[in-house]
Length: 185
Image (tube, rainbow, N blue to C red):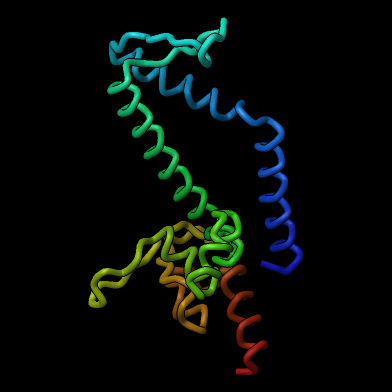
């Protein structure tokens, strides 16, 4: 991914944040509707309360226990969707650095004194708890169509980080060439 592509990806994150700020409660109300719909489908009763003390408008919500579980299900689905998009991004050659920006991890990585790409990989793939076990993230390469096992941005050479590309994979071979030219191998 070129510097221009990385800058475009970073700008997209900034624009999405601006849209969310502009729309304020719109995404929240949509999520509340989804949670309420799940709870209703399971047979939970609706509850109603004033929007705030003395308000004429009311808020409809699910029985609290049903609402908690339905919200948890939505949260888990959203987390799975994040992972799906990370896999799609890696399949298109998006760097872990840019993925870290998209995951809004810049401040946390800086706070822990870690490179953003490595921090993003650990955030998605999970911290390795057992040093005998290798943590990998699998995705399908958008260039060669092969299943790739991504070991993260820790090793220097792309061939050490991403295994499974086809020998003629244009994207991967371009990454290897760029790396070797930069290191003068």
